[in-house]
Length: 360
Image 1 (spheres, rainbow, N blue to C red):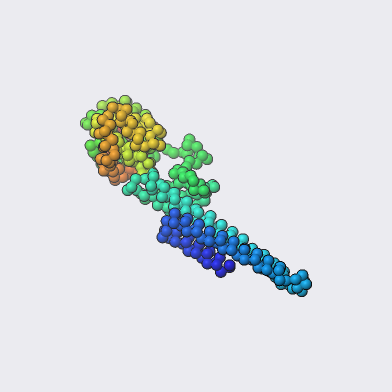
Image 2 (cartoon, helix red, strand yellow):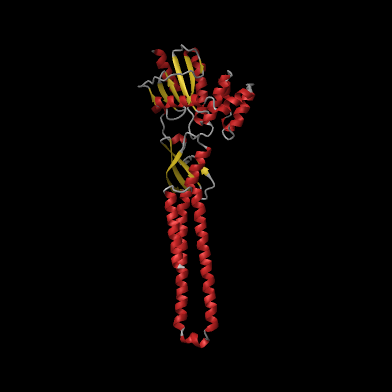
C-alpha cells in the first residue's frame, strides 16, 4: 500500500513538472490528474477491504484465551492501523496542498487560453508572466505585445476579470497632471495618410487623432474634439486614424467597419454612431455593426461583404504601425502639427497648443 501510494505521488509530481514545462496542455493535465486521484482512491478502498477481511479472519481463528496471551500483538496491530491512517491522512493533506498550487496554474493557463481565443485577434497573443494569490483571487500578470497587463481570476476558475479598479484611490486623488502628457518640445513628422478628415487640407493646424472605437477614454474625448472643431472652424483640419488596442475584443473589426462605411461616403456618421452606442455593441460585436450600417441607409450587402472579407484589415494595421512608430502607446492620442497630446484631456490643454501654433 505504502509503496503504491508513493508511486502515485511520484507520478503526480512528475505530471506537475510536465505541465509547468508546458509539455502538456491544461486540459491534458486536468484529465491525467483526475485519473491518478481515482487510482489512489481505488487503492485506498482496496486496502481497506483487505484489512477488514484480515480482521474478520483473526476473530474467527483466535480464541479469547489466545487474545489474552497475545495482547501485545493486538495492541501492535491497533498501533499499526493508527499509523497507517496517519500516513494516509498526511498524504491526503499533501496532495490537497499540492492540488491548490497546481490548480492555480491550471486556472492561469485556462485564462490565457480564453483571452487568446476570445479577446485577441489572431496576430496577437497573451502569455503568462506569473500568477499569485491576492485579495482572495488569482492575480495574473500577462504579456501582450511586450506590455504587461494585470488580469484576475476567481479561485474556482469560473470568472475572469481582464482589469480591475483600486477603489482605495479615487480618481480625483490620483494627482495626475494632464499637461505631463503634452510634449511640446518635439514634433513628429506623422502623415495624415489618406484617412478620413474634416476641415480644409490647407488649414494652418492639422490634428491627427489615433483612436479606438471600443476605448472608453476615446469616447470621453469626443465632446472635446467637437468643441475644437466648432471653436476653430476652418483653421483646423482633423484626421482620424485607427489604433485598435489588442485587448479590446471588437476594436479591430469596428475600425474595419468604419472603413467600409467610408467606402460609401458616410464615415463620420458611422464614426459618431459607434462612439454614441459604444456600450451597446461592445458586448455584441459585428451583428450590431451591421445593424448600424442599415440604420444609416448604407448598402447592407456591400457593407456586410466588405466587413466579413476583412477588406480593410491591412489598412487598419498600417494605421496602427504608423502610430507605434510615432510614439503612440495608448488611446486617444492627438498630434497637433506633430505635437503629441496623450489621453482624454480638457479643451484648455488643446487650446494652448493650437493657439501657439496659430500664432506662429
